[in-house]
Image (cartoon, rainbow, N blue to C red; front, side, top):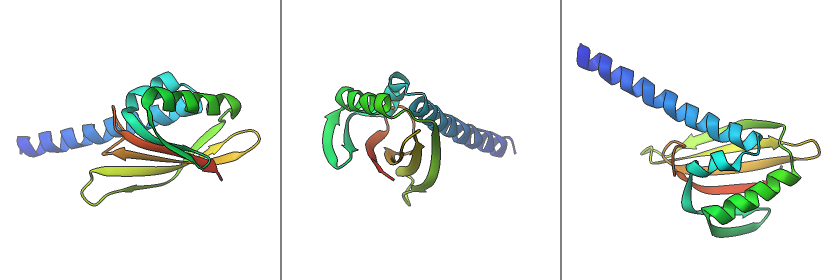
Length: 127
């Protein structure tokens, strides 16, 4: 009985931590806090901004993302859709970014739950 309790406790804890990581990432996005977003990204990632898709270092991708966020002040972030691979080894989120003038679609792909160094791909397009 005690083993079952511990198993349920740790599974629940892992779920809460992964949800907090996801919330932390998207809150940082809304606040244009690229420094806080950095810990979630792999050293190299696929970054696409309006058809300009490149494999970039985390530093360069963060620079481009920071530039985007400075020009487009995000007022709301809404997770519209999410999915997980059958073996739970990866997941994606489709997010709506609302700014005063335009709305954008952001796609975030990660290995496993969004956590430290798991984001492999970020795409931003006009909605």
